[in-house]
Amino acid sequence: MSWSQYLQDKLIKLDEQTQLRALQTTENGCETWINKHGKRLLNLASNNYLGLAGDYRLIEAAQESAIYGAGATASRLIVGNHPLYEEAEHTIATWKGTESALLVGSGYMANVGALAALLSKDDVVYSDRLNHASITDGIMLSRAQHRRYHHNDMNHLEQLLQQDSENKRKLIVTDTVFSMDGDMASLRDLVYLKEKYGAFLMVDEAHASGIYGAEGAGLGHVFRDSIDLHMGTCSKALGCSGAYLAGSKGVINYLLNTMRPFIFTTGMMPSAVGTVIRAIEIVRTDTVRREALLANSELLRKELNEAGFCIGTSTTQIVPIIAGSNEAAVRWAHMLQEAGIAAIAIRPPTVPGHTSRVRLTVTAEHTFTEIKWAVQQIKAVLWQDGVLI
Ligand SMILES: *Cc1c(COP(=O)(O)O)cnc(C)c1O
Image 1 (cartoon, protein in one colour):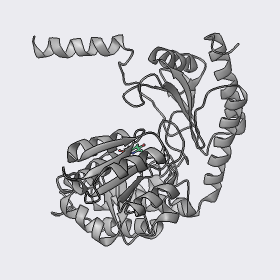
Image 2 (tube, rainbow, N blue to C red):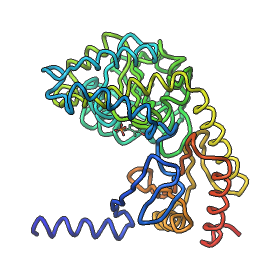
Image 3 (cartoon, rainbow, N blue to C red):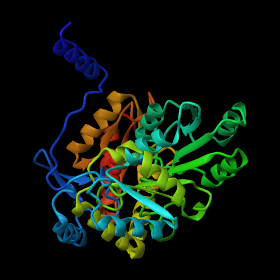
């Protein structure tokens, strides 16, 4: 079979499983109301949780830092380490309360790179089964023994830890806010288990950074002395791009020396680094945005609960409506779009089979009126689909 025929067949299979994806242009993605396909939609699909991506202060910071060039010109270990990096990493470490920090191009690169660098095939890694795909990819690349524990199930995790020899090096890794379910990891228990079994603990704060913990420093901030490596993205609540790894001098220096997605890639563009510095300064002091986000999240969950929807275990700004089948999730998302709401259908492999869903996210910028209107629309759509009677 020719390559083109083979690839075409694969796409047809994806389509048959309602798994085919297509890009749709969004003209003004930073806003609460977006234009997609010529339609005006309430944006319940973005990770711009604090509304900072379109903030003039960040756009100004990007412009000001462009004096160092449009690009970094080389890997940071060569000549790409422009002066903003030191300032950014100092800002991150101070905010996170760690000795040291490393800024890298994206959250995906941070997870893949750090896990592949830390783990070897002689090690064992314990990973929540709902962890982000970039964590799974980093583990696969490391060739370490992979133990997936049931979601947030500390008894299962401990059972697995007990089964492996005391002599094995062990690493536990978890999202702190789970990206498709909107619930939180039990960090206190993870710290307890990490200490009991002498494991290394790494946390991914992608959906918590800028929002939870003192000054938005993440859910791991109170446990900072027990967590060995904090990863977080600058691409969600911080409204920019890139990601950080924060921890002791020893761990960060090890990553700087061994992490391939750090070594073999051009440094981030200066304007992106300057924007991160400004974004952290803003989230540390802007309690108004954080409080608005928490109030909006609570209202959305409450309204959906009262309307009788299954929103799983969400306690955050990420609120899924579980559909089950791919077909139902895709149909709901489509119907919601017709009703004026941008919300995305999430299907495997992003979530486990038979748990396809529509994922809603709120930001600090939504009004209570918009959220209540959205829930009315969702009710009408699902009633029309025969889900509610
Ligand atoms: C989004 C996300 C990432 C990847 O971050 P990017 O900066 O978008 O590459 C990693 N981990 C989790 C949990 C995420 O939600």
